[in-house]
Amino acid sequence: MKYRDYKQFAAGNYYHIYNRGNNKEAIFKDSGDYGLFLSRLKENIFPEMHEDALRRRRASSCRKVLPAGSFLPICYCLMPNHFHMLVKQCTDLPLSKLLSKTCTGYAKYFNLKYGRIGQVFQDQFKAIAVDSNEYLVWLSAYIHSNPIVSGLVENSEDWQWSSYAEYLGSEWGVLCDKSLVRQQFQSVEDYKKFVLECTVLIREKKEMERLLLD
Image 1 (cartoon, rainbow, N blue to C red):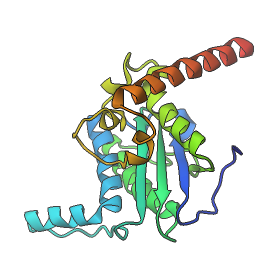
Image 2 (cartoon, helix red, strand yellow):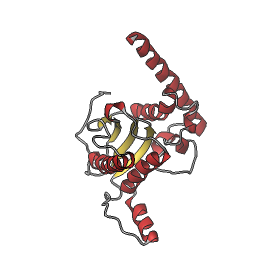
Image 3 (cartoon, one colour):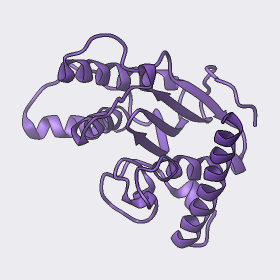
Image 4 (spheres, rainbow, N blue to C red):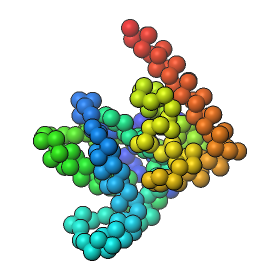
């Protein structure tokens, strides 16, 4: 796996997408922020649901959403000052369009809500092409382990703002296609064990890096 920022997007490929707040500042401060970001993400991944909701409310929206079937999210995790997503680009429409639509709208909301100006996110998002099945499966564990490794919760399933609960069977806020990863494990418990094992390794690696820097 070559760890480099990859902006030559192609249909059928999977990408690890991530970004953090400008100057490492928080980009999500309360549940409303997390929810709004996910809402903007969903309306561009599942535009038919957005349009149905507007019809039910007999409302109109000036926001244009992206074509249905353009992207397939595999997993995600929103953290206080950054986010991770593993997404498949299904058509020639580049992933940069999804990130632009989601993050630009969110940044406007965030600045208005908190009375601030300037960048919310640090530069452009990063995108790494996933070039092997092994890396894809490990990446799902890495993304889901973020809340534990960062010390936000003791159990990853307790972090509301990731897809891990989906992987364990929750029907709340379903966003991701879990089949690609889940089919490689005999049971949900096997996947949970795999995530826990990866979490231990990731924490040990981070601790070693901290000691070396000290």
